[in-house]
Image 1 (tube, rainbow, N blue to C red):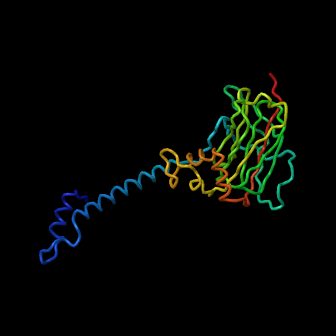
Image 2 (image 1 turned 180 degrees about the horizontal axis):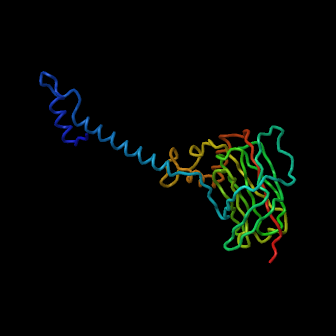
Image 3 (image 1 turned 60 degrees about the vertical axis):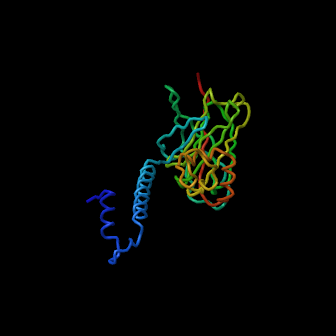
Length: 256
């Protein structure tokens, strides 16, 4: 059964006095105001809960596209030794990378792999591209780990991806329009940051429009990681710690 505010006022007015006929022990207006605050609080909590249910792990792309794929059967090419002797279960990049570019579809083979056993610090992976369609994929022991990749683009501005690593890993690729003009003339590099899943991004990110740092959604946190100052502050917070991950670079000459 529900009651209107006027019903409650009448009931309190009738029963809220002392037997001697004195004033109510608690102000009627105060009780009503408190009830309104409780109702507003419940509405806010319901709205936040609904928003949280809609939030999902996201990977943002700044400049470069992401192509996700089903993981092919496990296999690997030669790779350099692990960066430390303390190695957990290091995931393996898939042997091929599927590229979908408008109506064109093709696969690139794995040409270079590097594995790491710590997160919280930047890593630079250097490789020699053989086409303008060079692709990369980062795979993580913890799918909830945060990953930021930074790679050169034709515009001169850094491009790459940012978001949760995901069950299949995250990555991107170049094409004729995005690869820098000197892409094939020299070795290129890919900068990668991997942070633990519980990294305190909200604590170090700058205030954003419509986003309180204590309650920013996943997409707001992913956007914040595009800022190098935010990444530096986050690295100082989490420090380098154990966490296995690997990166694969994919490429092959393209025939016209």
